[in-house]
Image (tube, rainbow, N blue to C red; front, side, top):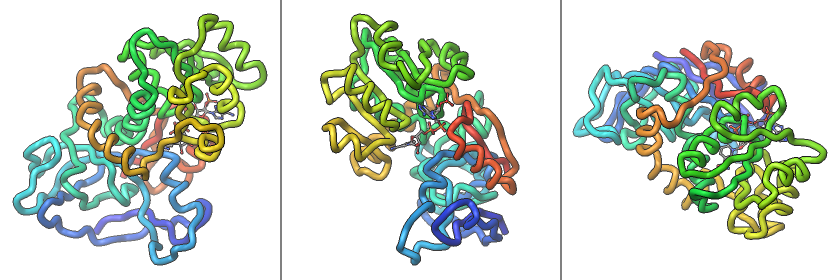
Length: 311
Ligand SMILES: NC(=O)c1ccc[n+]([C@@H]2O[C@H](COP(=O)([O-])OP(=O)(O)OC[C@H]3O[C@@H](n4cnc5c(N)ncnc54)[C@H](OP(=O)(O)O)[C@@H]3O)[C@@H](O)[C@H]2O)c1
């Protein structure tokens, strides 16, 4: 018997319920994981915020976990090869990660680098693959000056690190209290709010080559458009409507091309973390039973790092 969080309806956090569940024995191509940590992302609560198809209720929530393999289906290998009982792994993209144990497709399970905690590993892939795709679709390359909106957030911190690895100069927007987070990863911080455009122009008098937006505010969209002439070098993950309106790109994990790219980049991201070239700052952990308090903090949009649930 395991426990897992489900959304019993569409709506706010009041629809969540912690339920007991039998964990299915793994069939061919599946493994069972005893969860060491659950990674948390805004998509977790956005997924059940609204909807009309009640046939998908109760809806298990959560897209990524790290833990230990407790059972392996017949003729089954995990994505990184082999995979036996007792192995420490991370898994993304899964369904129903807010759980103490779950059975998942082995193709989404990878060996966990020993230098990562469960909380770090559980939080690597959703934000990391999103950040990687943002840099990929905007062609971030050595010598570029890149503006990242929301650079202190989970995706933002990963974008900074990956853009720096590609050889770019990164200017990032954040609250002043988070400037040190950006500086730790080699980005130049700038406060969002009135005067943002002038502040970025002052820092980059020769111009900005690409704008990567993780916040989707009107200000972020307006400043991106004012600084970057080539619409192919602007991307957002949070302002799809404005992207369509102005002709720049919005990406999302449910788009087939994005999903394919993000799946393809998982092993590379895991290798970067194993090498110490990419880190996942974890701001705080909560017991799995306190998921609602953790989600309230996540919804505040100022977590200053990733959150994890510990069963
Ligand atoms: N489309 C996709 O594929 C995809 C994938 C992942 C995430 N997302 C979405 O992307 C967004 C960010 O995700 P995340 O996991 O990085 O969230 P997060 O860790 O909560 O980060 C939120 C960020 O927003 C910043 N922020 C808050 N209010 C702001 C404002 N008024 N102006 C500018 N920045 C502001 C915060 O900066 P300070 O705390 O420094 O103020 C923080 O850096 C969420 O909406 C999420 O749903 C989309």
